Image 1 (cartoon, rainbow, N blue to C red):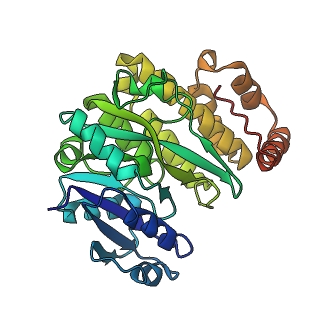
Image 2 (cartoon, rainbow, N blue to C red; image 1 turned 120 degrees about the vertical axis):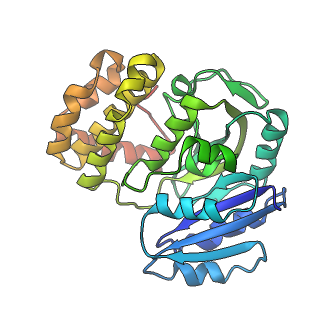
Length: 311
């Protein structure tokens, strides 16, 4: 029985999956299996995955049903006690699973284990994610996950691990949510379980990979998701602050995508008093000016300058 089961939902990642799999195979900690759920890919993703030879890799296929369904199936088939999630276009550094093992050994009764991660902004620029926590050098308990995640989310899909038992205790990923399934999952975990953060950087999130999250139905799905925690928000001020920032971020996405319908619903749901000066300015900015600001922001990234509205 392997210590970790690595779960990868695979959908149309032909140009990325080989590098992703090789980054897993090169882990310093070797006791794991890799379960790939091919979610009805229409490109050469499945063939590319099969070209990577390792007896720890198991591949299953299903009709296209979404990442949530694929992850649920992968976890169901997992034989490891601990689950480590991985997307088909991200990269782990060789220390990733070893640092999870270190955290689990130190805090065996905890529920959610998070590693620090980098963000790839362009082909030439990778920056470290920033969090609202005091800097420490060793794995430690996070007292308030939501306040800790007000700059960048402390938990991110390819940088978390948890036990299979806790997964079923929390509840599976929800296939009906078309966008934000991981956010919903992390909120439910953080509300019920102890969260451990390991400050060692062990992977990177490739933000340059194109996705379809700008589609209007995905934005509306996220808005509905945020509002599904209204009762919990009333009892948890930190969760309210965290979700308010997510609503702000989604509103900016809507303005850039010219999704006036969802923006009109979101705007009154945002507590402007909880936003900083930069965020208030961007939220009120006309869409055409905001789009120019975004282009300038992307230009600065190519010059090695990254400015965030969250700090």
